[in-house]
Image 1 (cartoon, rainbow, N blue to C red):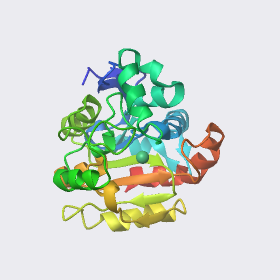
Image 2 (cartoon, rainbow, N blue to C red):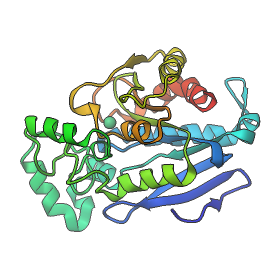
Image 3 (tube, rainbow, N blue to C red):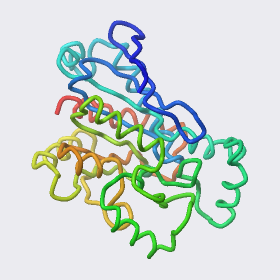
Length: 278
Ligand SMILES: [Zn+2]
């Protein structure tokens, strides 16, 4: 993690690591970062709209005094918010501009794409970052084999070992370094909220998920199958025994179009504030 840089007296910008192709992974922080909730976006390449949604929220947070009647300076006196809007910068470039954006990795990516009919969700090495965290690794690998996934792939290949990828390591290091209290991982789509991962799930997480659902109209769900292990929120709950959530924003087919940014944001803005207050 690079040194934290003050953009103004309240806003901090820092780099938490680099992607496979050496693109920087940035974090924005506001308030008391010793007591912070972490919002992450775009860990899946086709879900780049979550990056824009998080930046949109951060823009509101730092430019307004109140949001939904909540006094923001009161909140940030004791609490902090860290946003990592773009966890998978190489993958999002591939999703938007094709394999040529991956420069020296263009040919291996083209070879992976040729073998599959799936759209690109992974990083530049064909590892699905949200399957690369250390949570239920053996079960995850068994499920991958059952699904016929045994090598780098546009999606759902978890890598050779947990946290093998620099993007995954960057998030783990950030949580450890700043002792993050709560995580909300934004994905798309489905208007769903996931809060559970095994026995380390804090008892209050279900009630928190209900509050997030009540403030957005989204549904609380339990994960199944290949999506059940190896995710960022799974690792956070398992490693920290603290509340972690996955929020699937919007409805439609990924990638959700940019025109959906404002309607989705309007629907979940209150939930994002509630997530900071819980
Ligand atoms: Zn996703």
